[in-house]
Image (cartoon, rainbow, N blue to C red):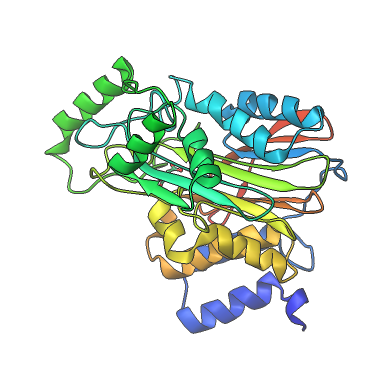
Length: 340
Ligand code: ASP
């Protein structure tokens, strides 16, 4: 069998033989009788523009981005505009203003952005700035660097005219206080996604009417993390990657797992090697599962958008959703998962 027709059954059988993976790994194999054993994309053929974004509650972000694209705007402008909607929403406790703080009570934000030319910018552990995605874009466009972190990122943002603000909402503060009370009873920090399913990191991919791709990712990261912890979202190749020749990918979930496999680059590279966006997401999730013994307790989700408009979505465990703008319609979907 040629590499391009590498089947999931073959992949899983050889993995199982080599690694003696538990039986649950095969759960998805029974969902379809397709020869490739991958989830089938049953959506109508796509017309540009297309926007694919992590988590169902991000439809308003997609609407703001779609308005830019429907006017013939650039994917880069659309994704920045879209992500800013979620960053400014105090009800979203995983992104921007209203994000849950670290264990010291500080809201520290991570964000990255990448355009059709392969230009990219990011900020990590940025405090006091409501729109880290716009600071990331400024890093990309106004400096010779890709990534600024911590106090340096804040100093750069202030110099660029961004306003210093208190991002800790009363709700997020009370959640932190409650967590502090419970903390002494806990043995270890609870990873993101366990017990919550409605919204998280925003990762947005867009294909504009000119056929160009861009992507953006923004988060407040793992709630109550150690101060200084940086996740996958601002790391180019981990939380986000755009290759305008083949496609783009983004992730949400436990960033440490994504960083270890350079997840979004991995997904994009699978597409470069001939996999569909769906196959690429599934192979990246399987790569994580093979390396992580407790994968059934954890969550990572990938989204992929191909240059031809095909999409992919897949997660480690159930509950990963996405918002899609395609053929002029806004819809939401739950992704298929590795552990059924
Ligand atoms: N991926 C993000 C991080 O690890 C968190 C998330 O998506 O929930 O920082």
